[in-house]
Image (cartoon, rainbow, N blue to C red; front, side, top):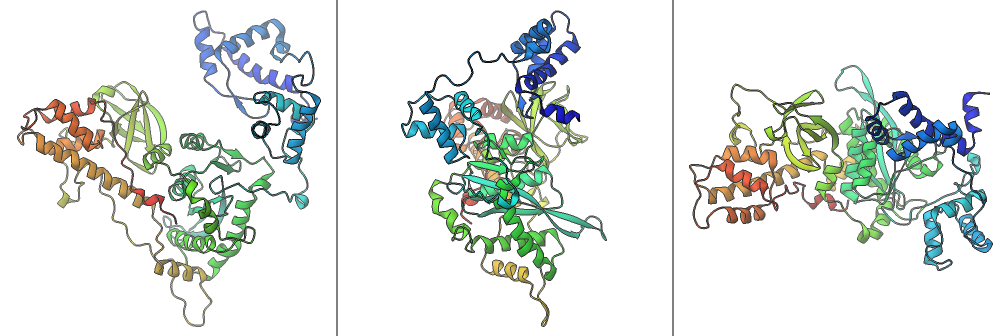
Length: 567
């Protein structure tokens, strides 16, 4: 018998005792001296441990102390749960137990929480009588606590559907075509498609091909879907590493989305809608590439978006409605996230300690913070695709922004003027001017096959369907940042003497600590400066006074509400 087979025969009490022993053994192996025991227990309590079912669990420092004492006294048996003195559920009558079981058998997908809510909302049992542990023991005793028993694929015809649009989103990765590698002429690279599908309406929320299947690629599609279609209630993924990442969990928690739901290993049938969509993509889109002239990733994505437009407006054979029409039936209940909240949710986070000069390294790039953060541990929030500027957070609060350290002969480099291509305000680097996407196709010559994807692309262009790119959202945010900084600069021009107003100093300061709310800044200056006359205080003194004002927190630099428009 293999070791894996023996593990499956362990009873739950022994399995949990072994999981607890993993914690105890690390404590005992360290053999901490007196005075260090509590610190070690707290260190172990800060970790996540693997349970017998593969799920992670946490344990308190005091519980570790109890486990160690019990193990030293009774061995492995001391780490086992005590059996219940009275078996079975005593708080419910047989009739009430039968009621709970019947509700579960009626709809096997019902969760424990939903069973309790149904019973209480329909006044079948008194509120507060059912506890989650009680219901779990009842269902487990009757062999109906889990999902329906697996059946052969040929008979696996059970179906489900989300109750309303944005109730459940599904996502998966699809292997795409091979395209010429733009970085290595003469070679080809595989393209991968990430797509999100609304379970209720079958609407393709967004999809995009990439030359890699990394986490930033997935999150770019997820963020774009959220910008276009609002916040979903739940997300349903397979067990891919990118879907189970800690950063994906952080995004879901920040946006108040239900925890990530994952398919059972080896049983992806619940993921059937996105699988069916991928099958359609293979048959209707990828197959058409044979008759197209697409050779670039941009051309492939433009053709895919044109195909998605056609798909979303075609009646679905299962629902009898076009996905877009069905999604719009509940548009009044769709909620959108504030763009700044959305931006913060997708930022990666790393901890660093700046040296005595305020310099730290991230992704091989050196940055510098102000002297007040030197030798302090700070949190770096950044977009891995946009490392020209990162955010510095200290003690849970925004502190400043930092850019790659560029050492010059003088401490302050000269900012380029507008005529030299520099930023007018805010100090942000100039954004590249968007160029038209190269045509995905070329016209068919007479007598040749039909390039249907090329036809869809041209039709989409003629009808004015232009997909906003992530760059456009960045440019909109940058424009709002410049406008907010211009308001502050105009305000200081009115209130400070020209001899002390160093506009370049103001722009550098706003690049680190802005943008600020113009009206709040005006009120703060009214309190600091005498009304009706220009002050001759040094501009740095005035700026620091603004920064210390409690009402002047950095405001959102998010783009306009264009992202909230329906497709």
